Length: 121
Image (tube, rainbow, N blue to C red; front, side, top):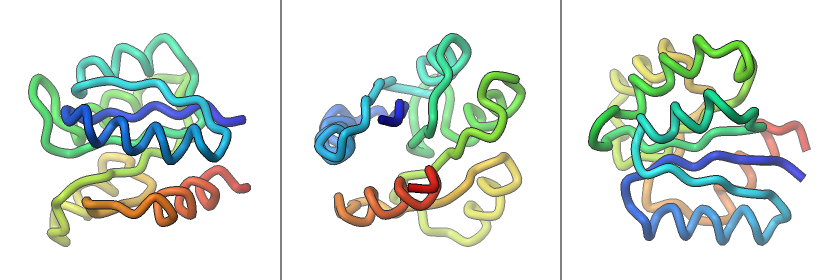
């Protein structure tokens, strides 16, 4: 079973992600913004992190840059789940250390497919 962190300022999005992932046997931790996500990633090793881009306090790009500095998260796949589909933003995300990109609204099957792929399952 994989331990996955989901970071999104929308409780309904976090709930939808949790339902999809926990239904597939993963354990899911949640954070409401980038600062909370970074705090959790600083204290717990995750197998994968799913984050929104636009959030209060610290956005997803800033959070990824900070998480990539944490030794315990080296190599942890980070997936952006966002309404943004701009190519320039995708390049920034990749440069910051994002592994992949899913556009909202997401389909549970697509999320699970990406999850299996990045976790090598």
